[in-house]
Image: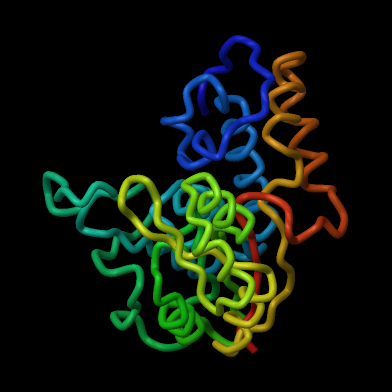
Length: 264
């Protein structure tokens, strides 16, 4: 959680939405990222199996520890390098309490047997960072037992198009409506993949997964959240409940898409 700074209610820019951790956003979005992660934790709590299960987490974020605290057996795949590409002191990041660390490539799950896990968590936009997403999703479907489920979060096409427009990539932007794959160059030199709801449904369906639902991570806009929390910092639980209770939210909204799918 980030500390709540002084009031600031102007509409955040795309630049301030780039860093999902919130660490690079400064005061402009500190409240929104606090809200964002509170919503993410609540959504994961609702989604996790009710009975103790074997859960695979490839997110590289906060979800593994939360699943372990819910008394699941969590296999957490750890990349042997940090996000900046530099090796950690012992070759890998430290495991979170209550999880079983596995050093490996989150894009390839060949070290796991087929049908060996009850659930997969692919949060923190991990599938947007794997550009050959089809292969990763096929591996997720393979390691899930029949009836097993996956929760995933990806960059939305809304975010991708906004980033292209912000950088004046008009030729790229004009190709988006007809593109089957939308790759987005970021200012730091990295490339990620954005998805429309239709593309995400097709991706999951082609892997043999049945989509249960797709929704934006947050329906409430960053400016709305910033304004409400500036006026009343104690309104955070109410905002989270409002977000969770949103019925049939517009799939085209939001910077990230959240989806749940089940192996047939």
